[in-house]
Length: 273
Image 1 (cartoon, rainbow, N blue to C red):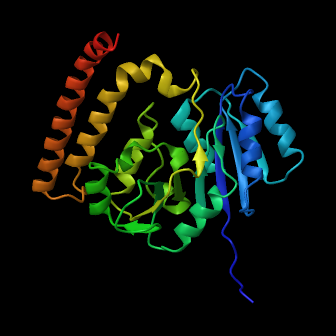
Image 2: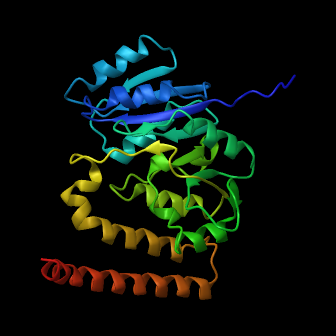
């Protein structure tokens, strides 16, 4: 008989005024086929019934733990706060307006356990040449990330992270909107990454999400450029100078292409009338 014990996973759910969504998010975790988890909810001083809903689940299931911040911290500082309560081997972020499919935790953990050298895992585009799971080193993460795979554009819900590695890297910087991209760039300098399929969780689209804010529309491109440049200039960047130059050239060409397509959009509307 196998003596293997499933490692504890800390599912981290940050919340702020999510009374319309958080019950479904919690239930999606509780319905997981992977049972050895703790669900840590870190509320950022919600003004609605979010906390009351979360506590109603905590009263029924000891794996659910609810914490309320002393003051409103903001998105990424609250993600870091949630991680301070974690005791699991792995950290699995799930936003309080999203859902994880019943098989999602099990797939992520089982894939990570196959590669002890990996520090984190991200949902990735399927390859024609190799099946998942795959574990790739820092240089390959960077080359793919700035190529067709766009690893650095993944949201925290697409990830699973070893807690010791998260703590070693100091967690998220706290920068609004761009904290996930910045963290993937940083952690990928030092640790291999496991690639697993999409469709392990569902990201809800609604008008109150951060990606739909005016801040995102005005600042995201600038912030993304800043963190990418910082990573490419970092002494631990896994790419050679010629590779960095190729990445910069590719990013410039992509920017030009997107600008051209953006300028053509009004013309397409006219011709389609």
